[in-house]
Image (cartoon, rainbow, N blue to C red; front, side, top):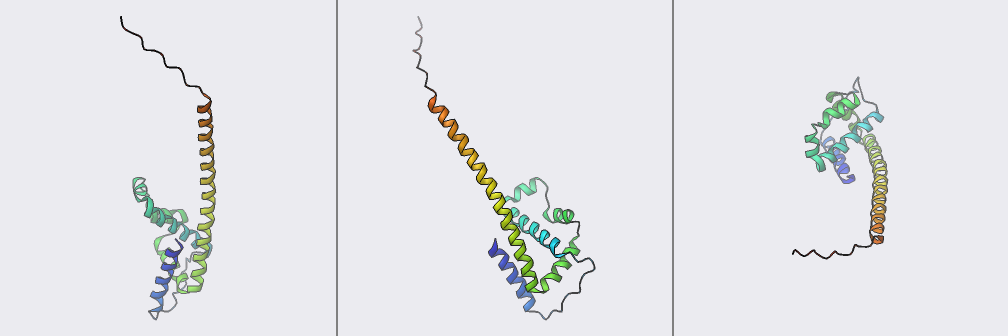
Length: 148
């Protein structure tokens, strides 16, 4: 995931390095940096979900772009213009991406703890079932009745 983000930043920076582009004008409805971090976090999460669970998203009629725009109460133009504005200054944008990475790592740690706890509960439950099974004595086989 971090390699993908680094590649994204590299390609994005390469695009700007190859062109003599003036700094974009600050949009009137510029998205605040903290909100931009939240939005980019959701974008990265949905990209990962599309890579692993695309059928599930389609089955539940989830369109990531629309979901993100509605969740954060923004539109696509506002997002593109704000992203372009922040991305112009690579150092600043790297800082935003670094905060997104921190947020991803924090969420991953939380979910990993939940997964570990659930696995521990499942193991204990299976162990207790096995112990109960070991204490139960098998019934003696009944002899088959003969037909007369």
